[in-house]
Image (cartoon, rainbow over all chains, first blue to last red; front, top):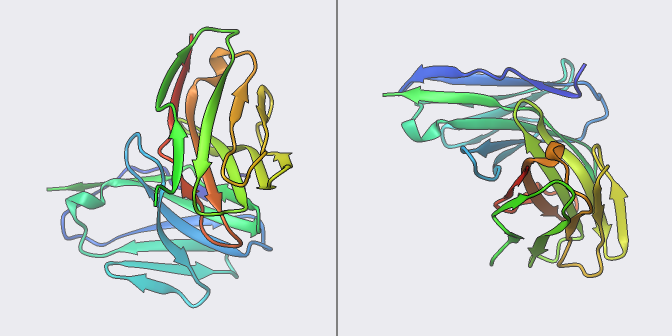
Length: 109
Length: 111
């Protein structure tokens, strides 16, 4: 079993739709969680950190479920510009960060 | 701020050639790392450093060397390039438990 798993997609959604991605992790001692966005052939860029109580940034909401060992990302009112690959990152120590393989999102006009 | 700067952006090597990928950061981050990204594999850690003079191996270190003589620079050396090292390489840095900051990548092809 991979340490961090994501559905590769693609998720094809119309503009304005709400879409959610999950990411599961195997190490129960994991301490830090992030969502990154990666555009084709570009570097990953931080979208948001994920906090225990859940957090929101505009149209984006991230949640952590420690009991079931997954994090989620919800995107409301999808825009064409949201089309990208979304990477889940799990940290199990200050210097050990594991990346998921990413979920592709395509927002269709 | 420049953040994390990688050079070159593109490189083509022949099998057996050596080269160094450069990475520099101006954020005074103690942690620097190198990842490679291959289709369907996600980002995999090659080597990392938690400070000047300290380096350690990641998940896929074979065929690569690193050194950290200053806080700012963390070069990655390929001693004898192989086609299996064709990939996109990212340098990343951070401080404490903060998120990683990535450079814009080096696309390497080994023929």
